[in-house]
Length: 74
Image 1 (cartoon, rainbow, N blue to C red):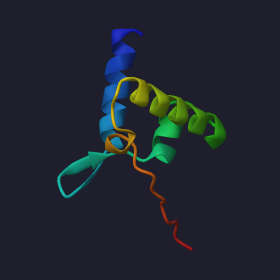
Image 2: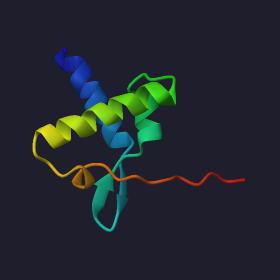
Image 3: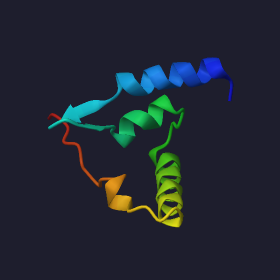
Image 4: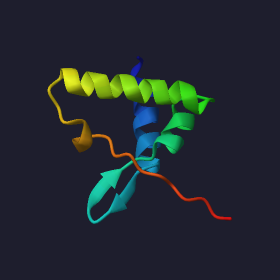
């Protein structure tokens, strides 16, 4: 991946960061579009593969992925 693209994506990720009680986090539905996935199902598969990689690296999935729901305004 070229350096310019990495720099651009890093800035974009920082634009999407949320903070609560001093903890930074990102919402998958927002990252989905940032990373170019039009369909949620395709991005959900990527998340599941990332969880497997996390397990293979002997990392606790819960330390890196929180299953949360975002309420929409009616």
